[in-house]
Image (tube, rainbow, N blue to C red; front, top):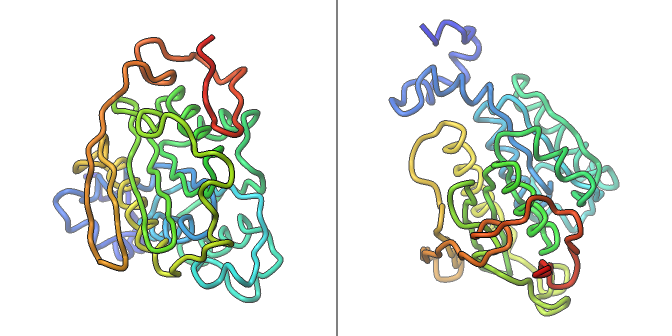
Length: 271
């Protein structure tokens, strides 16, 4: 029986998973054998990291080049006051190690860039895009599509959040947003503020999508954008379709990101 591969401590730790028909011992083994790269260890990355680790995803990569600031602690809950000044990726990794010794953590104290994105993403079964800028979002989308790696994407603004899941078979981020806003058009949370609990909700949804992908269970948000309004406490789902003219997943897709300029509008030249 597959369950015999789980030791007594694991049978106890994951017992509430194991008794679910949709998970069971085989599903828990799939999680323990699975891997996820979390891009960003901030507001969205924190709850995603927590719940992926707690679920027993056996290998977690954490990529972030930033250091913990005290102003982060209102929402970035894998970090503590004692972590101020430490690299976020290192602080988050220590949190995971304390939470679940079953999880191997890969620490990348770096920004995801065109010259390292391929090597990073190729190592993992799923990516959780918890980044806070359009340049990284387009880069992760493009490279993940080239590697047939699904992405659980999330973003937040003040009191609102958005989540979608980009699968190799479905429409990509460029189908949804062909071009990024102009620089400065959408201010960041340091300028406008953000409700501290908001990224907790959005990041948990991203983690849920990642777990479902690893389990191959349920319906993910492929071709659907989930809007969450914390002030009204409403959820709305808007469908979107593949764009045949999309330069990444359309009828004539790129075969590499060489020459793509990930700046300003993050567009891809027709030539």
